[in-house]
Amino acid sequence: MSSSAIAIEAASVEATPARKAPVVIREPQWVKWLLITVGLGWFAALLLLPLATVFIQALTPGLAFFWHAISEPDALSALGLTALVTLCAVPLNLLFGIAAAWAIARFRFPGRQLLITIIDLPFSVSPVIAGLMLVLMFGSRGWFGDWLSEHDIKIIFATPGIILATTFITVPFVVRELLPQMEARGPEEEEAAIMLGASGLQMFWRVTLPGIRWSLMYGLLLCTARAVGEFGAVSVVSGHIRGQTNTLPLHIEILYNEYQTGAAFAVASLLALFGIFTLLGETLLARLRAQPTKSH
Image 1 (spheres, rainbow, N blue to C red):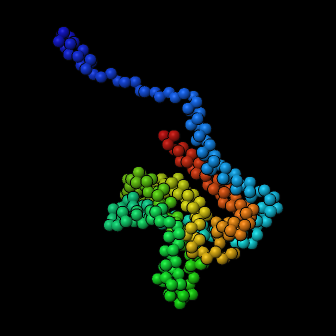
Image 2: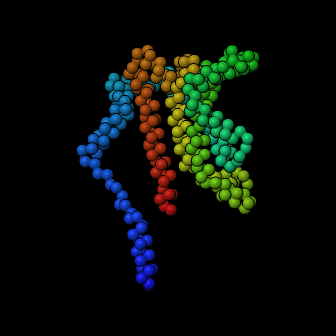
Image 3: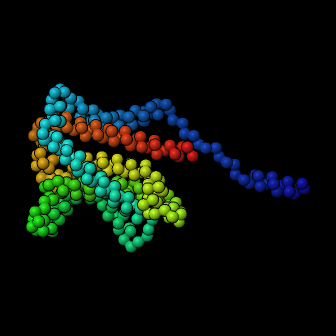
């Protein structure tokens, strides 16, 4: 190698800036423990303490009082109505969520962005406003009030109105869980299945559904939790008729307003337990969802 080549190589090496070592920020131990303590204290004050208070207040009067509060006729009626509304609203949102997510992810059509905006509407509109919208449409003086009265169909202050309100509020959950997953997967596998002779139903059951099953289950879990705990919209359309149109959240409100604090906390503990099981279900689904990624 000539001296000129060696000089050029040496100059290029000198001109190349040296890579800086990553800067490691080292905080004192007391700062780390202070931040951990503040975070845990904030978590305990906002979440654990109120949750513990619910169970303490529910069990303080005794197990006999607790059992009587959750097994009296109005409480059982509220529990049954909550279960009925949830069993109606969740399957409806399941069907709509799959259809809407598949249409939005796979096709480009006029009004696509408008459909996405409408799906997100329950997130931006107060549940009370949603209830008032239903009253305006289906109430005795609403747009369809005369027709409903002529055919003796009752929606507002009845179970159908509660189902409609809950369904409207829980619309986005399934769609919003499925849409990113379906857009990320792309249509290639579905197109290949169709080209190989699969029918639309076979393509859905054998190709589409296995790919979105974890997102679908997660969306159904969130949808169910929201349906069980819905208060605002249901409060507007239910009429607060004890033993008929009261769900569990409304029954708790009535008990608390009547100064039956122990009974209110006893019934509230049922919703708290459901919330805890929902969180455990979310954690389990997250782990199951991550397992295929780890295996690859």
